[in-house]
Image (cartoon, rainbow, N blue to C red; front, side, top):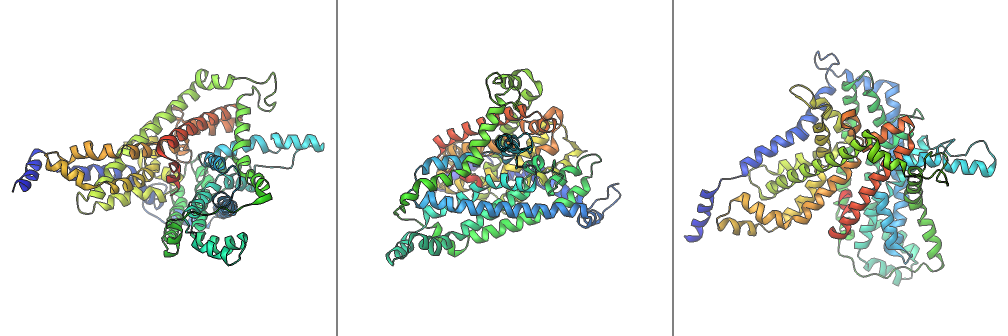
Length: 570
């Protein structure tokens, strides 16, 4: 009787927060997800003169030859990028996880550096290195061969494929390396015992077992390349070669054709959803449980005389994705005139002083990026925490549906989501275009699934009995949440905050549609400086973004563990 009376006393002391959580979650998710996606669908079937509904936008978008070519280019680009990333990432993962190649730990750090480097910053660096006439590599080759110009042209479809493949290798590498490290060794040992060579064992045993991981990495790279805006914008627009994302950007040049852009964007959602479902099905196959099982201790394959040559070959990828781009950006940011290079008399810290103290636009852009990113990370973490808690504790019937809505932005490319947010909040009753709020909403919505998926797993691992004990002693559910659950998830909350903050300060694809001169961020400022040919300013801001990112990731690795960034690709 005493045990039954205690919960009744607890209920009298407080009230059930379930309905409040429900109402609040629905309201927030409506603003972030439901309204923008609903407007995106509505405006895609709306007449340009707002005179009714029509399918004419779809007819125009998918029957006009000038709009069909970018679709073809996008699929060629994505297929090539994903294939190259898989072909390179898979053997690199095998060398790291299965052989005695020297420097494996350092190589992982370099792959991580490539992973956290936005590909559009890599594209900017390769413009400095391989622009047809002014790129440093081309100039060096031309001076050596006494030619008029070098052979490289980064402003091409091939150049875009090269750059984007470099920064998509980490996806396949991460998936395959994780699978190889967990792969049970019995089958490989049996193959070796029967006399098979290391090469034959890898080809006939190891690769088939990790094939789901390879396919998953391929799909992730394909989707990233399909939805990427920055690299195609910097490398393909000058070449007058359009892909879907750059064509969507052109729809927003004068005259703005929002209805046509919305119709043109809808297939991207369908393709993304279909491929993510395929990836989930592949990773969920029974066959893959061997990869996901508990791996045993294994003998590393001795490479013998090939150890150092293979290391040299493997280092080509970080050389092209980290060393050369970082050096090019750093050298340009330290040069008074970038084309002259970092030579005595041209070295200077002027551009950093200019960006941080003299130029009001760049200084404000830095403040905007950090403040918008921090606001989005805070809002996304709080929302994700409350919704994950509500869904896990089943505070009301159908609570799990909120989790599905929370994950919905994951299947919407950033550029498409930005169009939906623009359509929803650029007119009454809620006009947010031109304000900081619309960018914070975009960043929060874009990366909310990362925070939710991370916290949902962690909350599920917290024993509900601890909360029940607190409520038995008279605490309300809200107090139990605040004093029991939240402190236990302190590391998870911090990790979720950082996992949103890092990509938010580097986000370009959604910001480019929603910013105005008063709300510019570092990434949009880089975009504007590129148009103006100010590569010294571009490089300086790029170095600042990379420095902030690498410092945050290094600290997070120290306190949150090695798998911190791997959560973003899972």
